[in-house]
Length: 160
Image (tube, rainbow, N blue to C red; front, top):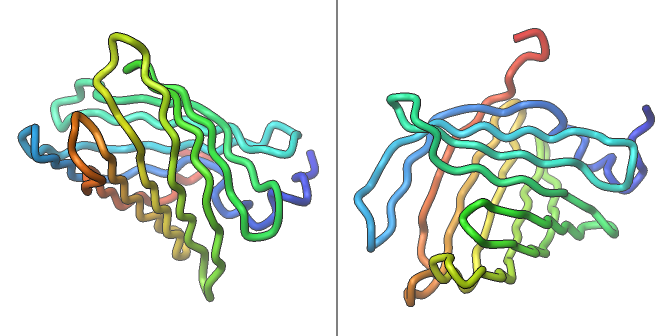
């Protein structure tokens, strides 16, 4: 399958990424976790995206799924659905550097009636070689935009 031309700048994301993370927020106890991101080419002008996390004891924590698009040079969009009752539409920028790139996204969030209220999120993905740093902030439960998660993921070899 040939990668859609709009996705060529994102081709280094294809595959599975996994590594340790740490979470904190003023309303919860800090915690450690493992995160896994999967980016898959589906032959269309977007990549399929899947995220999941689990606790050090193996318990599943969070998951989300969606699509990553690049509708034009330097522009990025991601559409996500979460089982916690939120959907996110995030838009932002893609900036290349010597050995990778940085993606910055700010979202609009729609909450179901039973979900904890999340107003907005900010996601930053920094790719440098085979390391993907992920930072996540959110404005939720009445608080302003505040750092929540940070993870350092490494590419999982295709034969693993």
